Length: 106
Image (cartoon, rainbow, N blue to C red; front, side):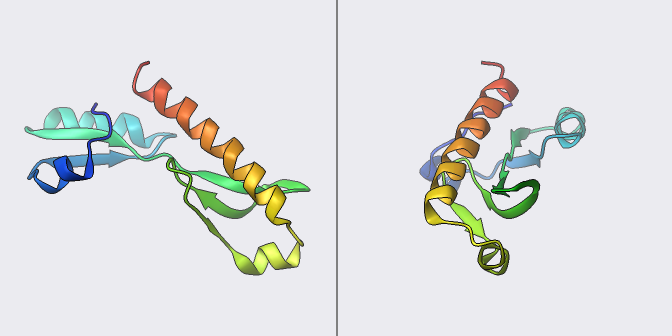
């Protein structure tokens, strides 16, 4: 499995990359990557931004670099503050970092 390459390295590469998502996809991605010659395996990890009073309700999603996307309709319906969103994005970004280190074997 490879670690993130720079944008320049990605742009100058013709490599085929198998992208896998956790909870089953990593195992399958690893098998596919090992069968196909000249392929690399990478993992995509995102986390949901949870609603304040219902951790099962996603009000958005966050990426490893801290960028996030909100479902504005739900955010408005449940009156979520920007302070809460910032704190939740930071917490979920830290969790993504932890999971990526685990998947990379560090």
